[in-house]
Image 1 (cartoon, rainbow, N blue to C red):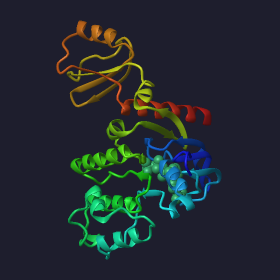
Image 2: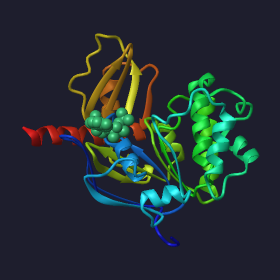
Image 3: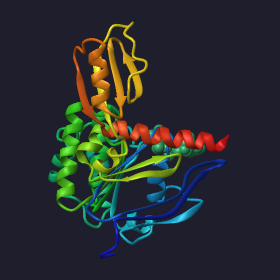
Image 4: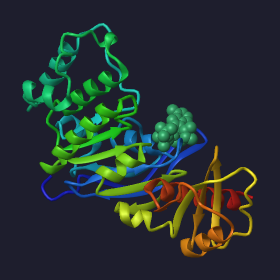
Length: 302
Ligand SMILES: Nc1ncnc2c1ncn2[C@@H]1O[C@H](COP(=O)(O)OP(=O)(O)OP(=O)(O)O)[C@@H](O)[C@H]1O
């Protein structure tokens, strides 16, 4: 419906028996945004995506896609989806499956352009069972785009793709976003979310724990990270402002609330070979948000 948000989720609760996967979740996404859903394994991202698509019945709450119920939106070709366990008939050829799906929509994406956009050139005669993991994901993208939908819901769309495939995939998504499509994707590749998303929504234990631009979410983590090479016996105790220490081989990484104070103390204590100082990444911020919520949840459960 004109003027409706692309996605409007209110009070969504999803249960599997005794497990509450999504708790009373609200999420509104205007048309044209590219939104990343982030969170640890089991946070509830796929449950949100599946409920939004009408693939499972929520215990409570309402979902509207472009002003329609999930079932109406899917039937009208308003939404294309790539699911984590998207099934394909293994003995059919890619072109046959794509033809079947395109014919089911009132307005299908022109085939030649679809093949180029999804990057499946040369795969149409290939049996589905002969596709690699990354090729299979590109075919799933072609199927998601087949009805020329204005809204795309993608659950870990690049998990089986190599670096080149992922780069091509996100270039395609940027093009679609630039032409007004709404793209909502769940991912564990936080650098992709950082590079592509206008907005990130962090989910932990079925609740939204952060929602904003990547810069706003990164601002949850004050401070910087200092890394350098150190001998195993170098003492790192009692350094000022340090909030976390990790060692990987000879590389030490310190999280600090005051990089100047920490660096002064380190320099007074010896050299700092291979020194690197950087601001918080999206990964730092998401890990920090998730661990804060997990500690609060465990604390509340005690
Ligand atoms: N079919 C199911 N039956 C029972 N429990 C389920 C089912 N699907 C998901 N869950 C549980 O619901 C919770 C949320 O799972 P969900 O798959 O939505 O998380 P996710 O954030 O998508 O995880 P991942 O990043 O690993 O894909 C988890 O505790 C999971 O074990």
